[in-house]
Length: 318
Image (cartoon, rainbow, N blue to C red; front, side, top):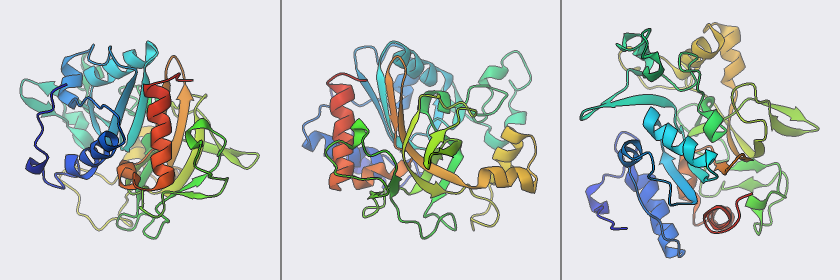
């Protein structure tokens, strides 16, 4: 692979999709640790449905929010053929986009204004993937969804949270060599649970969280660690809304539950960042947060990341 990026040409933050904030940090750590990482853009993945064919493991890092149908099709085919995916990212695959000539199209909260909405092309409507209009919730692929997560240590969403996960299943292979035990905090020092987080509908069974599977998350998905997160509403963010936008809590309630009244909002208010994994034809793991890369100097976070890359990128994947 020929790397042509000039990391000095990228601002630390650009629309909160910062290469310099997440991907560069992860790549520097991986290369220093001896991993050979090939880099592709979202546009590469969209254009080439066979881009992932030569590989064992696809890695997503940081804030991987906007996916075209072509991108998603490519990754789902990869997993169906036995490929593995590691989502060291959050708010992942939240909005569907279309790429038209040189434009990225996404109507977002105003998806009813999308010209394809309500037509025979409605499957390409640029709304959230969890919208019943698409009937393709992202957690069918990733295991988790921003609609069941939210924000952590951002504005008034969990403003004084620990910044780490509570460990629930320390015997899982991802935790091998970390010495973590049930109830320990993972990544609190460097604050890996930050900004945007993805979770799933869960219930307690014998004191441990399990995925219910009713929201699209595979029933084989194992919840390994969690941290509280809260979607923005008018009480938790001081930020003004963009024209035509809505607060996430009310938007999610209306789309997923049919109304944005108090009872429906309360059902979705208490989200989580969920670190977990499931096994299908391939293995899919997720950290359920954007800021995992900030913890790579932490011994436990580094060990978990190595375990994932070694097992899924080099060895057997089950």
